[in-house]
Length: 341
Image 1 (cartoon, helix red, strand yellow):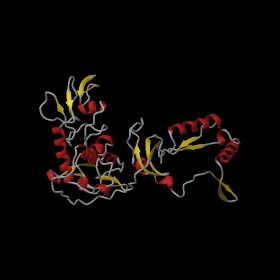
Image 2: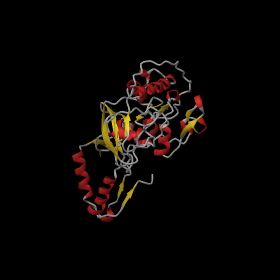
Image 3: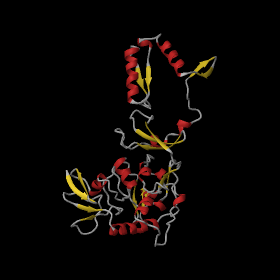
Image 4: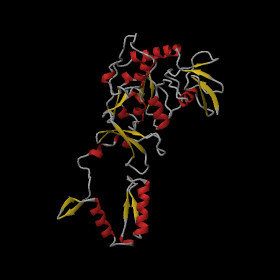
């Protein structure tokens, strides 16, 4: 373990940790836009600058290794003046209508601006007039709001291993681009939405952007992997989905189905109660009645008279119980699975 002091608070962190890791463990806020625990340290935004006793300059804490005996300051007048200048430049290049932005009250740049005390921008705002890419069915890409933190690029490369986007252009013309700067739908983007969740500003936002009022944890029903979901609810409607960072299966990452494929839950044709055909018509019955009927009729068969088909949309645990029922209760080895679809 390495021992150091941050803002007067002693803290111990494992060898290999950064100063930013130590600050977060000590409960000290250090602003950052390009950093995420799931991504490799990058040091691009220069907002996590710190002062280290005996060290000249202002190193970026996200790439600075923690060493024994370090004395670190994170909230000085000089640091906040530097940060305020950086935020001013970022705001000057983007849209300033926060109230009309989908990321209002969830924008990390907005939060850091308040932290450093930014009240006005001294520079004339310049919009580059880049058209919004709305080709993706699930999210918008507005490069006029992009701050070039590269979190989307790194998430696509380091988390999803797709590499659909990267830096394009140089200097003031630099943008996050697809191959040939084509729309997302003409790239190898898989629409997983990892970049959308990583974006700290309004450059990548969902097309269905409704703020949830509460959240519920659950398990994705699309396949047997069992990814953890956090559902954002507005009343009884699912309006947003994100990966559960604490889920041991997916650690917060999701595929396109898990993140965006939720509308079937509220589809008007979704069955909400068992149906039984009576006189040629399906009529609703209770769950107890349905289970009694199924168990009574299954009891008429055994062994080779019985076969079952499991579902890839059930959890591994459900499918395990189903095959035990087929073999142990019904006495049959005839069980198949839809995993080939």
